[in-house]
Amino acid sequence: MVLSPDNPVRRSPRRRFAIALAVALALCVLAIGWGGVAPLPAIIALAAMGAALVYAVRPQVNVRRDAVSTGGFMQRVERDVAIVGLLAAFPEPVILLDGHTNVHTINPAAGRIFSGLEKGRPITPYMRAPELGEALDRVTGGGGSETVTFTERFPVERWLEVTVSPLGARGSAGRPEMVMLAIRDLTPAQRLERMRADFVANASHELRTPLASLTGFIETLQGPARDDTKAREKFLATMAEQARRMARLIDDLLSLSRIELKAHVQPDTEIDLVPVVRHVVDALQPIAAANGVEIRADLAAGPFRMLADRDEITQVFQNIVENAVKYGRGGKFVDVSLAAGGSAKRPEAVVMVRDYGPGIPAEHLPRLTERFYRVDVAQSRETGGTGLGLAIVKHILNRHRCSLKVDSREGEGATFTVSLPILHQEAKVA
Picture 1 (tube, rainbow, N blue to C red):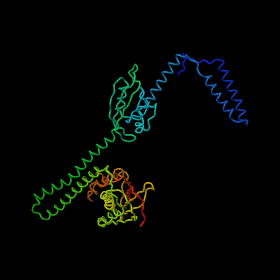
Picture 2 (tube, helix red, strand yellow):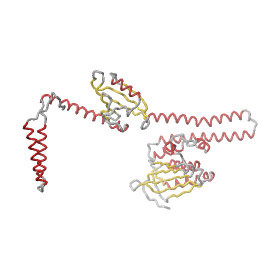
Picture 3 (cartoon, helix red, strand yellow):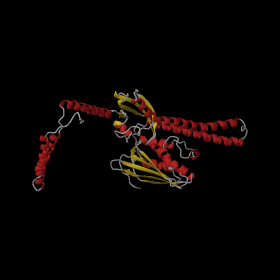
């Protein structure tokens, strides 16, 4: 209820007397209570004083006008409660603004995206895109609904589609009572599309390079080098290597495709991790020796049993250990350990692979498992890498509900830690 000159509050002398009497009685009884008497009288006195005050200061207003004002107020309260309840149940982000584009209501979905939004504050500091500002100007100036698409780059990059709609009656200037922003977060779809485009471009490039090399050597052998024995042997060796490179790339692409098809199929074969990791270490010792590296293994006796696809888990550790051998050339050792981890409720086997090479710059760490992403493109191609090894590792581990952590500092090597859930814990240190 709003108090105004045409709605005065009148208090009679009798009411003023009631206030004074209530206060005096309360003070007397409180003094007795605090003087050592039981506190109950003091509590009663406080209650009496509160009741008297509420009655005494209750405004005397015109009953008819008060009823109309209260009814309008209650209607607004009921409307706001209904709006909040409706928007809370809506799965998409929605923000309600008042007619001056200040934030009025934020549903939970919008709150998760725009954590800094405050009610009563203008929306523009939180969504700075010129496209949205122009749409709000047109809608609050008398226009109809509009949909705009834009990119927000702070605090993180997001692609948003926002439908701006006027709600309620319009004032004399055409300004609506409220404005609704219905938001679609296009970020996942945009990222997926970007990844798809990058994948096609990278795959095409990776296949085109060896194919162009093969085509060039074939033309040379058919022409100038037709009768040159030395050149023919050299070119044939290079062609064979390029063909193997293409075969590796196609194999990795097919492997990645097969893993993605089985992403939601849980493995149901019980395996022991100890012989799997030991087999990988033994199989890669010759490659390590050729690179001047020694693989040192420290494996718990186990068993570490888990439900898994043996071939896929073998591929995980083969890719990680082989990368450590090839890209950790600055160091003389690669350490592979297998130990118990996790908790009693969720036991895990933890496999750590550490190299002592040049390390990985921090800016590359978040993108290591992206398809075709390489820290050093030249070195990767020189060592026969396709740029898909860690992407395959990520997808296999996701399927097996495992996790991968990478720690590295430049000049100090890199450590890859794989945590795998196991069925039960019986491990003993060998």
